[in-house]
Length: 45
Ligand SMILES: [Zn+2]
Image (cartoon, rainbow, N blue to C red; front, top):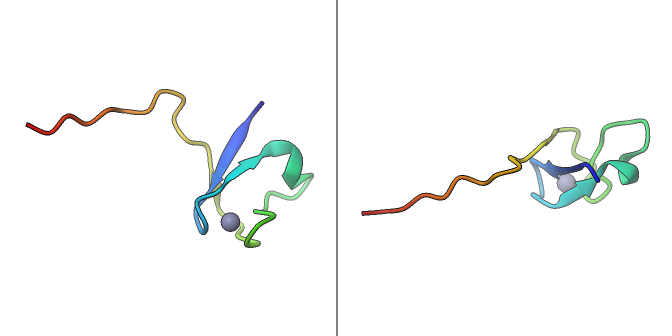
């Protein structure tokens, strides 16, 4: 499943919840982005 992330509320938004319009169903934000499949781990030294 393709899951995007809302830039406004930072909730995960499944592509099936958005329908045709790309919009966050939670806050109505129009900016969603696809998070990285492999999150980068930052190791502080
Ligand atoms: Zn949102």
